[in-house]
Length: 342
Length: 275
Ligand code: SF4
Ligand code: SF4
Image (cartoon, rainbow over all chains, first blue to last red; front, side):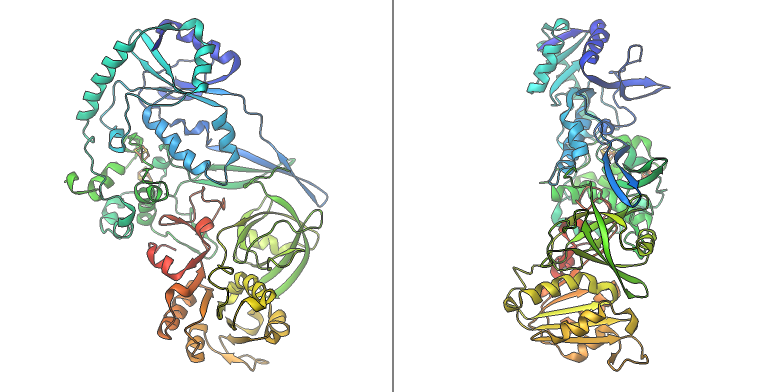
């Protein structure tokens, strides 16, 4: 184990920033989100949950994909992507790291999404173990250990030190880059913190959710469950839950006319929106119940059925905290997940 | 140019045929005059007019055509309106091919084939029918039942009359919804016509058309003794990416763009009823 004294962290960020971009949780107007680090910004590694998840870093909320230029009748496609500078994504929690794995299976599956891939490959991810999980956390239900996330390097934070450990070559390279700041030590401290956190995790209110009924073979039965009506009744279709969710991946592709050509861009979309599946001659999901059901069936049944049982909820609890109507996946799991929830 | 799934190729329209009052067939080649890419019958492509939007269309020409691709497009929304206003020589973008094709080399080979289409539903079938004509010796008898609202709404009427009707071991049955001057053929809806024809239930069937037609025709076929596992159809849902990522064309754990658009009826039975 290696450690870095906390008061050296700012200098360490500056060092990384010399040769790579650095995305790190930053506090702005009372909210903490991942931002590009700059001298003077208020870094907040202690904050458990950023409002938005770091998926933005690989799958931005909007991105220009290409430009079309016309000359007379002729049409030309111009690549508008800038070169991807290597960057470090620092402080990713276990749930959000797992969510990147969930997104990888979508965007890196054949045919590869090269926009996502370029950013993914340019990134070194440093995860940060949780030490103060909150009541809305239920990552453990999905087999995630908040005390030892993976990534290219793992870090732990206490009052005096940041402890780090490399897991991959990229992680080793990063540690070599910051070697002037690190010293040996911390095995015992990290172990003690992990044990303490594990105790807290066990006692969280949602730690015992039962997922046993969410299996591909129950797909049709769950789809037909009468409880969806009541579960979704208050849903406004605002899409907040999909935008804060680290694994939600739906997008739209649109064109935008500029003074010199057309930009084709992609942006996040939401299966909670009424026009999401609207076509000129019909709509396959006409009610909010159908859209609500789609979101949760996708997380708990459809996605696992396509991906060897991996759920596409990571228990980050963001939708639990943010839904204006107090609806969330925990309620869905409690209602439809299995006997032990009763 | 960049070879990537979401980045299209540039195509030029070299011919436009007005098939019906609201269907036009567009012939497209690359800027070098060559065919843009190869496909199999039933597969789709994303066609776009930059600045307006992209839409998924079935490739209606047969893969055996090595010179160009054709798309029969019905005017029914914003992108299709703009496409319909284009003239020969206009540029569009095309990417694909997408989706699972009809099992022409697996299930269809050596079989008697029944094709049933309603309206623009003929578009995806045209590709497979012309493929079968090209490799005629590989397939048995072919029966085509095609219906539209009126005589003027029959897509590819010329090709049907001059080529399909004269093809060896082909039977073509046309029907229109209401009597019309100049029409001496059958009048009535497709599902009823199919039952009247008393078709041989050992044929492998392909159904394409509006959902309501598919529903009633399928019921009719089952009454005639057809086996669901040998009946195929295509689904159409809204799509943006075409490669199973944008999340739009989900039906249960399937993506229509990737796992479809061609489905066996028994596969559809396993999916939740949301298409
Ligand atoms: S569904 Fe809710 S709890 Fe699960 S990953 Fe998304 S935001 Fe987090
Ligand atoms: S579940 Fe809540 S956050 Fe999600 S769309 Fe409905 S009202 Fe909005």
